[in-house]
Length: 380
Length: 152
Image (cartoon, rainbow over all chains, first blue to last red; front, side):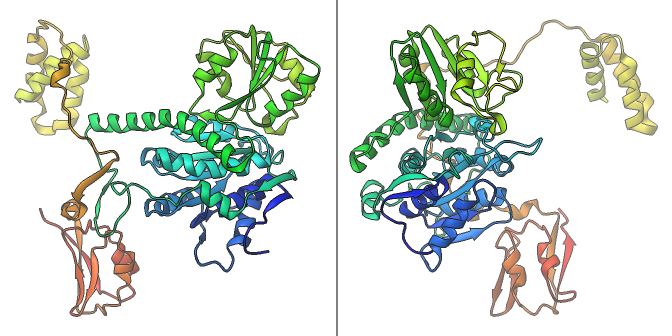
């Protein structure tokens, strides 16, 4: 199979949706290093770029090199794409810090997979959530359609604020599950996503050799970090604006920072990202006192929107599919930092099932100043 | 020796009641001249008086005195990077011999772009060569490049 992506409604996995989105975004440099459960993204991209001379497709010797490759290509002014999972993302950790601080507008799909040890290739968000402080915009998805739409939006966000964007999709639950995905035409994507035009004072230009990221004075170093924080703050507005513009262009809803469903004045709320929040919506049929909040943009963290959404809720429960030993789960820590005395539950690690029953158990856990409630073995 | 006396005075502050620790360190460092230095340190230790403690501090700039420097948006210089003499860091430098066949393999691998092929053969840009020696490692010709110590 080669050539252009199909158009219209097709049955595909989130991995295929990610590959099609990259091609529709007219990426010109793809760095790859296959890793389960991301592999199908790379395979599908390899097929799609066969015979094309406008896309450079490179297999690197590691994820560390792969991130270096896309950083370099982006700096030379071309739109790039890459994808990874788990150990691959962790191996590239120092490049993640570099990419945000050098203001590289990368778009990367992380197919979330549990972190060694012991071995697991199953879904778990610890890989991406432990990269929380690297200065990347992080968007967590709940369907193949949302992966496709978010990758296309991610280029607009990244290139507007000059920060890298990580689009996260839980392994297998999304990456290997076939579902109906509506593929836009190339024409429609072109109308939404203009060609990359990076700022000249940032671009690598062989005619103007300059020093990139050389040793600044301490004051200046600090000021450059502040610039990253400011760009992240700007990204909060841009995430919302781009989602609204996407909805207008493509005629289907695209959520920005978060999505709330159920009873907005209910006495209980469950907050989660990705598929756990999607499962929580199943509880709404039986529970008209419940609000489910799915956080899509985990960074920049939508603190103000969450306070507005959860401010009056009596009992808030946050379910993290990520471990953060010694403190609350990542999402719970952020929600609690808003002054919301939420119960912190950790579950679904290494692909452990999170069913409506698991979430009913989670909703029964009392908030605690110090304790994290790990879902016990047997509750599923 | 004045510095060692000062060191003795500091040790009164940071190694109270254990002057022998500093004296042992002086003996192991100074060898033959150690005992005179130990005496100097002891003098400093015994005569040290702490009058007041002070932490370095700075004043907040007045708002109207804040520098309104136009900072660059990105950590990228406006300086031409070719003006930076990275060659000044080198401890060794490559010397080409008559065996050099000007094949250009070194230029391909040189991370600084300091090797170039001209009509007259290979030329080394010593202003930018950091002396890493990769050219020697990749050179396919026997004895064509040798590293020579740079004498400051």
